[in-house]
Image (cartoon, rainbow, N blue to C red):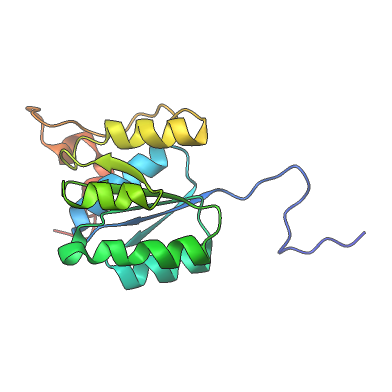
Length: 164
């Protein structure tokens, strides 16, 4: 029996994909760390609505985390195309805009209030609960605020190796 290299063998699973989106590159790094903690093998970073929709459609992720308030509320514009073109995706709005939260919730989106990008416990817990799985413990925990040690010392992946 011939087996195509493009098709996975029975019993094996391709790593699940997550797409994260925020206009701030530092926020994207924290979102990436949260998705990796949840066991997503591929995390795709995006910085605007156009990239978000294009990458989500191309990769058909299990989870999309975005800020509906980015670019003055333009993040809300991604909801309809994502719901239509990425069936079965778990859309998660991480938002600090109190006016947008009810609008996003009314569209059936899992919403998590952003209290600070370095406090992603609620995001991880919400995705864990919705997907019915636990985050994998690892040596590179998502940092919390009010620490004496700089974040880049706690999370080595936040350091840009190209900077001198």
